[in-house]
Image (cartoon, rainbow, N blue to C red; front, side, top):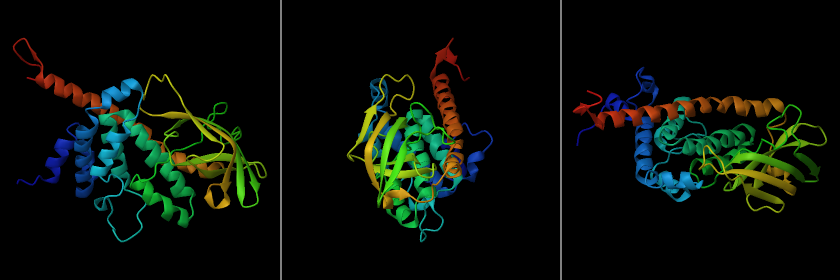
Length: 298
């Protein structure tokens, strides 16, 4: 069996990488990305069009992908396997989202919410105990999360307009309000909800769990783009959250802005991946299309 060199693997994985940017990836990261691409082709390609047309997320097929490839928890992604590793290299994150967006931007958007905005909310906002409890389960996809910031009337106005409220009542908080356009909200096991403390007026974050009393999530129907992403409208009516389920390191504008700052570049990566997918599709088509007696690429 022939073993490919790093450059040979990269030429297969990223033929569009004309400036050889992907050489920054480690051998282990490259292998995981190649396995991810193969798993998506195997499990998702046969069902992706049908789910997109119906506006459904292919949970069963995606589950098979993450069962085949530990895209967030594989030991090859971490240099120090003995430490508690909660963060991947930025190079890997970039190419992870690129590969997924090149395949389908809806799949990459789902990942960007779960492993980007949602994950970093717990990473930056959680206590050591909360991170140890939840982050490994997000990495393994045992649990899914999302990012409940945006509101129907105020967008994501953390500076002054956020209307969802939190009232302290002994060892718990009472949350009331609405959130809209929250990707993955309907299927999320843990929903980090940003709300304004009625006492000090600061933005805090509370972990609301699937199925809690007072929580309702309605799917937003009839979307034109990113149809497989299940965006939800969240209603919170006297939802009770224990103080122990508040993320203690989120206490205002700056803390929320840090999450956004750390994850906003992903959007540019999704656009690049989408363009890369179009390039590869055009390259594949023109290399097979025969016109005037010869292939277009000749």
